[in-house]
Structures are given as C-alpha cells and as structure tokens.
Image (tube, rainbow, N blue to C red; front, side):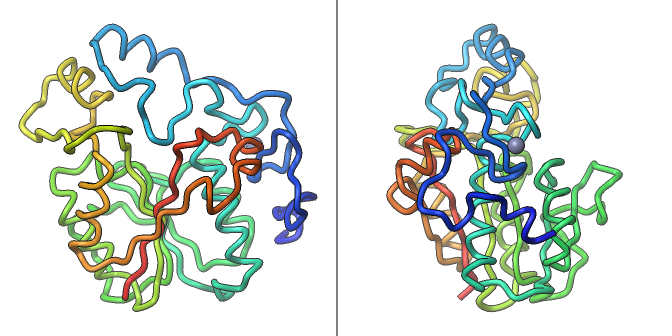
Length: 256
Ligand SMILES: [Zn+2]
C-alpha cells in the first residue's frame, strides 16, 4: 500500500505538468474553489478573497479525488518525510478536523498509528475540544491541524495543548488562513452575526483571519520551532504541478 500511495512519480526529478500526490492522477486541470464562497464574499464585501496566502481560487481541488490545494501539499511533504525516514513506522499521529481524502489515504497507508479528532464530527475517533484535550503529555509523535485555529475562541489555548500532547522532537502541520499583506491579525470573538463574520473573516464560523508575522509569533510563543516551507523549499515546478499559489507556505512546527 505504501508503494501504491507513493505513486509513479515520487522520487523522480520531474513531476507531470499537473499532478495530485493524493490520488496519483495527472488531471488536465484542477478545479476552481466552489462558487458558493465567491458569491458569499462578494455579497458580504469580504476584501481578501484573492489575498489568501494559500487558497487558490482557480486551481483549488483535484477533479479525481477532491483534495484541496493544501491537502496536496501535506501529502507531498508526508511522503517525502516517510521516504527520508524522518518518521518511524508506527509513529503516533493525531489528525484534527480530518480532511476526508487525506484521512483515508493516511489510514490506508498503514504506516502511522493513526487517530482522528474533532469537536463535532461524529465519525472522528475522538470527539474532543482542542483547547482541553483528554490526552496525556507527550502522547503523540505527529499531528495535522489544518484550518482549526480560526474557529476556536482561544487559539492560544489550542496551540498550548498541541504543544503539551506532542513528544519532544515531535512535529506538526499547523495551518490557518493567512492573508498576504495583512499587517495585524483581524480577530473578534464577540462577533456572532454570520453576515459580519463573512465580511470580516471570510466565513460564518470564523473568529479571526491571520497576518503572517502574528501567526508565526503566536506559535513560537507556546514554545514551538516553526519551519516555513515555501516555493523555494519545494521548487517552483513542484508548486506548479500541484496547482499551488506561489505564495503558499507549509508551516511545520517542532517541539524542542
Ligand atoms: Zn487527487
């Protein structure tokens, strides 16, 4: 299964012109972000529709497996780490708010000791609050926490908990919506009006939208080292193959 997921092109110098590392397909085009969001942003006057650091409006999802642009980057990085043996087989992985396609692919790998967690999703292995988790200290080797922090009242408490449950030397994929060029994180947890949340934060269940420096500093404040893996790290041609915006950054956190 590991070999199958790694696909035909893994490890080769050049990827096909378009490639999805989750389903190993070579689509002729990636699909745009759902019109639902574009219409909502226009309706409510959200000014940062095109300014997301990562979310690509025109090459968002894979037409074969449905994976988003960010899922494609996570899958590529995870594959690279497994190939470079920076994860041990059986490493304990906790996946928050699990993306359907990525979650299935990782489970099918049978490489990690995998569990999923979410506050609302009944199909998750653990139904838990990320700001107050029932796990013991240093229980996990690796976590994936993507687009969760913008939903919780105390993102500091969530990051502190992520730090606590990770082993020393453990790593995490920690991602949230960031607006390129935004000077300060926009945040107001007292706003409950859905239209106002659409206008300010781009979604009716978002409490904030991050500025880059604020985001990185917030994570560092809880003790994490932060690696920012951008186009220079992966290569511009790899970003093009995966249909990623050139501004995309993968944030990998490490517990010292
Ligand atoms: Zn795919």
